[in-house]
Structure formats: C-alpha cells, structure tokens
Length: 110
Length: 114
Image 1 (cartoon, each protein chain N blue to C red):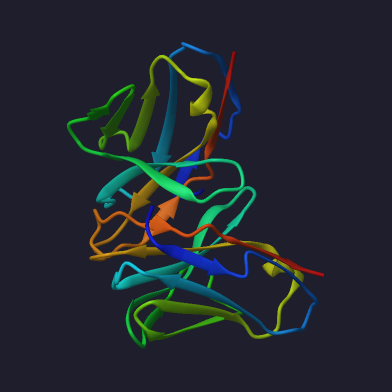
Image 2 (image 1 turned 90 degrees about the horizontal axis):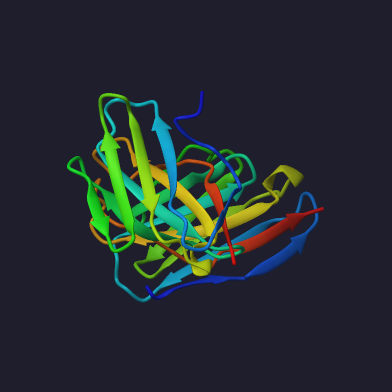
C-alpha cells in the first residue's frame, strides 16, 4: 500500500463548478500536510498547508481528518487556470522528509 | 519565485555513462533535496543535504551519489546511468528543515538514458 494515495483522475469539470479531491495517508504519526499544485511539465508549487482546524484561502479549502487519516481539497467556482495536477504531500517525521501522492489531475473546461 | 536553477534542463545519454546534474540556489537555504518523478510513483526523495558536506540518503538512493561543497550548489551524480534512471529530476530547497517548512522546487531536469 502506498503511503499517500490519491485518485489520479482526471476530473473533468465545467467552469464555475465545485470539485473536491481526497487523499489518504497510512502513517498515523504524520505531522504536517500540504497540497502542492503542478502544471504540465513544470515544478510543484505549494498551494496551501493543511491544518487540523481546516483552512481556507480564497476559493480553496483544505481539511484534515486525523482519525480517518485523510486530507481533502475543495475548489469552488473553478477557473480554467485551475487545470493542473494537485499533489497531496505528507511529512512523516520531525525532519523535512516529504512523501508525495501520485497526484490528481483536474481539467476545467469552458 | 525562489532562486533555484537546475542544469542541464534536458539530457540524453547512453547506458553506462556518468551523469552529473547541478542544482544552484541563491536563497542561502540550508536544506537541499533531490527528487525523481516517474508516472505512477509521484515524487520520491533520492538524497538530501542539511548543510555543506552533510548529506543523507532518501527513499531511492541506490545508483546515485551527491555532493555539496558550497551552500548554493548540490550535485547529483549517476555513476553509471541505467535506463531505469530515465526520469524527471527535481531539486528543492528549504530554509529550516522543520516538518512544517515549505520546500521550493527548481524547474527540473529531464534525463533520458538510452
């Protein structure tokens, strides 16, 4: 079983739609959680950190459920520019060793 | 954007040849990392460095070595390239190396081993 699992998609949604991605992780000792965005043939970039209380950044909302060991990302009012691969990332120890999920591809259509 | 460059950006080489990839940063960050990204696997850590001449292995370190003689440069060497090392290689940096610290990635190097 992979340490961090994501549905690879693609999720094809129309502009303006709300879309949600989930990610599960296997290590209950995981300490920090992130969503990164990766555009085609580009490097990953931090989208947002995920906090236990949940956090929002504009149209993006991230949630963490430690009991069930999953993380979610909600995108409201999808834009064409949101088309990308979204990487779920978990830090499993006290150092900065990140474990990446395989990514979920989102395609927003006009 | 963080000041991270990688060279070369693309390389095609033959099996058995040595290859060195360079990562250069202008942020004076202490931590540097090398990852590879392959379809179906996501990004996987190869080696990382927590200071000049201080390095450690990651998840997929076999067949790779690294060196860091200056804060700004982190080199990844494939001593004898194999076709299984065909991949996209990303360098990353972080300032403090804590669990909540953000990693910033370079633009990547596409390596093809024939």
